[in-house]
Image: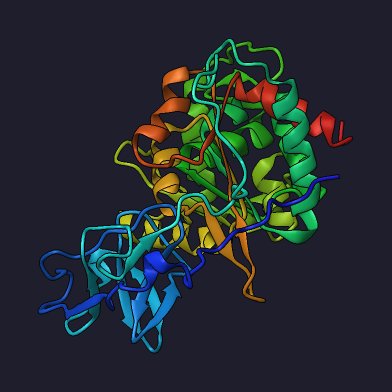
Length: 362
């Protein structure tokens, strides 16, 4: 039975906090520009002393700034700052400037960390059996108690079994939002319509005559109908990832790229609008699983804090997985500050089939 780890908030009655001053608030002088010595957020819970009270920034995001507004700390991207916003300033994290970063909130006070251990990084030598078991237990819990967001590259759409596995998970309620790009949706719809991905049969891997036209034909046909939902209805599409998302009314965000063909109608062409749409889904996410997409993984990792404040005020852990066949891709996220990410080095097509089987769906 899966159980969330308890959160241990700082004890602000501790003498170490007795002499801490209020945090310095300075107004932004112009839109999109923070005052000098602004504080930048991390992935961890951060508290700010305002008028003698320690306030937790509830919806945090790395590399953004804390703004005091209406009695709360609002975490804001630089591009969304407005002149007059009261920005917290200070570069220390120990409370000496009224700013306290709390990295060990989900570790019991009596827990010790062993300094020297083998195989702590994620590599091809890492045993995955326990990872799969724990992830399946987590997904069963989150299905009813959380929000599971999947971040996906197009590799799934190239394999018929992987498409079926993920569609089964969507139908069963294990997918609450999907963040992807034009390619994932295009090749999945190509698979549903023409049974190919980039012109190659998704089961036999046979290359079809003029198959290199298939993804363009798919985009063109969707654009002809004006929307993915109309394409699915008119062409009587009955399988695949996007079909399952549409059927179950699961939201998905398709962020555009400079290399996109078409693109499909719902793809965001403006990168900042795409980022806002992605963060809107991440704000309430409690488990995030990124698979075979390095740039999307880093982007979402930068948007995802290590914790979430629930409506009842409870602070809970956010689980973040990075799955890729490349050790570099899995470990890259930690280099960019997402230190709570858990890596699984494996083929994502095999991974999703294994997880769906572990959930009893195949």
